[in-house]
Length: 306
Image (tube, rainbow, N blue to C red):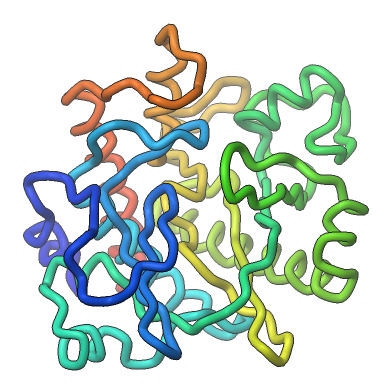
C-alpha cells in the first residue's frame, strides 16, 4: 500500500476499544487485542498508547494502523532471517473470509498460533535511555560491562543483547544471561539471540539509508508444537524501538526521536509516579506524536522503493 493511501485511511478519533468483532477475545495487551480464529489468531492494534508500562487515557488516532503497516513493511524486509508468524494471504483472508472493515484490515494481522517465550529480546546499538542511566551508575547495561568514557547516545563498540522478562502484568524486568537461559533453555536462547542481532543489523542498515538511526529495539518470539522458533508480535515499530533522525544526531546528548520517547519525555516533566492511572496527553503532544510515527513510516517506505 502507498503511504498516501495509509494517511487517507487514518481515523479522526482514536480506536481504543475493540468489542464488536464476532470472534472470541482471548487476550488484551497494552495496545493489541487478540482474537481466536480456531487454528489462527487475529491481532488487532488499537490506538492506545502506553508509557512506563501504563496505558494512558485516550489514544493517538490511527496509531494502530501505522504500527501494523510498519510491522508488515518490516516483516517483508527481513524475509530470509528466520520464520515469522504471519499467515500467507492474511490480508485477503481478512477481507473475504472474515469480512473485516477497511479500518480493521489495516490495523490487523492474521497470525499462526504459537507459544510465546517469556522473554523480550532487547538489542542495543547505542547508549541511551535506561541503558545510559545504568551505565552512569555502574559502567554496565543490564549486566553487560562496557568500556569507560562512553557518552550519551554514543554508538556502542558492538551491539549488545539485554533481554528482559515478559511480565503478564506490571513492569518487565532486566534479566542476566544465566537467568534468560534458565527461562527458555540454552538452545532457544542462542537462537533468539542470533536472530535478534541479525534482524537489528538489517533494520539498522535500511533505516540508515532512510536517514534514521535505529538505536535499540525489542523482539518477541514464539514456538510451534515442533519447537520451531518464530518472530511474533510487532517488529521495529516506534512502540518497540528507539528511532533518531540522523541529520540532528549528536553524541553526548539525547537526540529527538521518531518514537514514543517523546511521550515519555513529556511525562517526566509531570508530577506522576508512573503508576495507574496515567495522565491525559494534551492535544499538542498527541498531534506531534502522531506526526513522528507517520514521518518514520514515510521515510522508511520511500527508501525501500528506490
